[in-house]
Image (tube, rainbow, N blue to C red; front, side):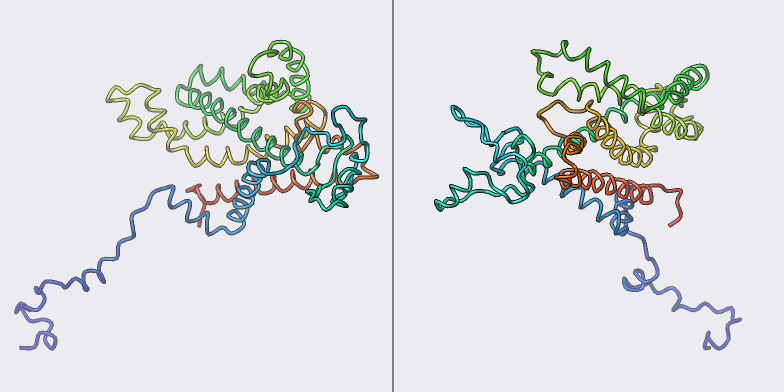
Length: 354
C-alpha cells in the first residue's frame, strides 16, 4: 500500500527510519558559529564605517607622533640660529613654510642638500613641524594616562559604593555630589596653579623633574576632579547587577565582596567601562589643551598643541597658520576619538537595538 496515498493508514512507513545523510544533517541543523562578546562587538564596530575610519585616523596620528621624531633632522627644542662662538642668526626666526635661513641658502648654492622646514619656524628659530608632532605626542599621552587614572579611581570608588550600599554608598555619593557642585574650570585653574607652586621645589633633582611640575599637577587634577562621572556610571551598573542570581550564589558559597566585584560584577560592566574610557580621552586632551593655552600645561620648551596655539597668538595676523595647524590637529584628534567612542557604544552596548 502506498503510504502517501493513504495517510490515515496504521502501517509503519519503513522509509521514515532510514538514517539521515551528512548533507541532510547540515541542511536541517544550521548552527551559528561560536563567538564571544568581544568578537561580536568588534564585528559590529568594523561595520560602522565612520567609527572604523576614526580608529584608523587615531592610529595613524599616534604612530606618526612616535615614529617621525626618530628620523626628522631637527629637534623640537633646537634653536637653529644659535651656533657656538658666533652671533645669533635671526634669519631662522619666523620662517614661512619651506623657507630657509641664510646659512641654509648658502649650503643650497654650494650644492648641498638641506631638509626643508615643512611648517616653517617659530619666533625662536625652532622647526615648527617637529614641535607640532611632539605637541601631538604630549597631548595624546596626557589624554591616555589621565583617562587611565580616572578609570582606576572611578571604577574602584563606584564598585565599592554600588556593592556595599547603605551608609558607605550614602557617604561616597555625597562626596561625589560635592565635587559635582564645584565649578570645573575654576577648580582646575586654581588646583593647577597651586600644585605648580607646591610641586616645583618638591621634585627638583628627582626623576619627575624631567616630566615637569605642570604635567604632574595636571594628572593630580584629573585624579581629584574627573573620576566622579565614571564612579556614578559604574555604581549604577553594579546596583542592578548585584541582585542577580549568580551574585547570590557566590555569596552563598562564602566568596568575599572584593572577589565578587573582580570576577563577576566588573566583567559584566566591561562594555560601559570601554565606552566611558574612550569618551574620556578626548575630554582629557581638551582639558590639557586649554590649560596649556592658559600657560598651566607642559613646561617650556616642551610643546603641546595648546601651548603652540597660545604662542601663535602673538603673531596671529602675520603668521596665522601657526594657530590654524595646532587647532586643526586638536579638532581632528578630539573629533576622531568622539566618533570612535560613539561607535564603541553602538557596538558593545547590548541594550541598543541593532
